[in-house]
Image (cartoon, rainbow, N blue to C red; front, side, top):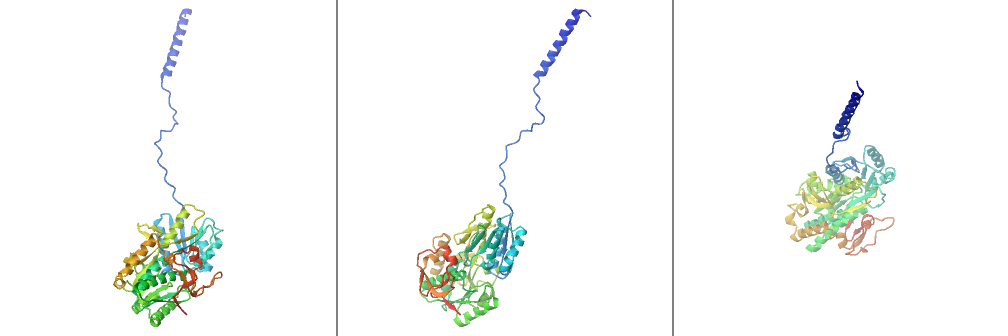
Length: 428
């Protein structure tokens, strides 16, 4: 091949290479195959669900056939129904010696809120509060106010509903004699009896009649035979035509039904909840919704609150909504499923003057709004009877301990109210 042809061939091949390179450069750059596909906008994150909570209640008595432990058991069930992440477990007939062993057993099985539903057997729980800092321990207040950051004390203002019961009882009695089958002198018992007694006396004053209230103690909370004997004595020897109780068995109600007199119930709507007797015997009851207090504790626990309120003393102005949508106050008067003035027995209603019914309705409404309280309204004058405390003996009869119109502190009501009100007749 001539030199000239070789040069032409080289030029041709170089031109062909440049053309190929140009064509390659015009091709769009390939995208990396490992780049993720474009994602849609993120959805709002679901709120984190609270940890599992197990509410464990140690009942000092049996549950079935009692109003106190029965009301606590119902509260545990209602809290579990309200929250998907809350379980309720319990032990019955727990004494002080068993409070800690049962608590530790239930903690090992997941319990993180442990309640002693009476002070005498709930107080030992404080001794293990430091050992289990992530557990809430709870005890009823009888008069001791000891707390720790995770040892909570509570009680409802039952005296408010008891005052309304007293208005009804004071209006109903025809003999002018009302009997109370009671457990034993304690701040808790004395305070509740005072609420009832003030209602009776306000009704008596309004109706211009004299009414006596007799109290006789059985010696403990659950003594069915002793309670029956006392109830019979009150009817047969003191001519009472209305019975109520500060004990826990159904014996006083049985006596009222047998004797054909009116009964005033405590702690639960005994007709509506238990089917005990009927509104032919039960004029009204007060219903304690412990779940309102437990609800506050459970919510604090679920929120991770390391410093919850350690003294809870809630009344008719506090409430919660149950799983079924029912809104309920901490305490209220009830009977056969009805609340307020509608709770007054249909058979009893014609025997109660309209002015008393209106007063019951008015005072209940005022207490629901937090505008009125019988313990603020009335003076506290000592009867000279009650319970001597280490730091405070029973004031002499006739002593005005608190004047009318002055609001007593929660601490005083819970731990220092150790005397009966003037005029209450305490039997030996």
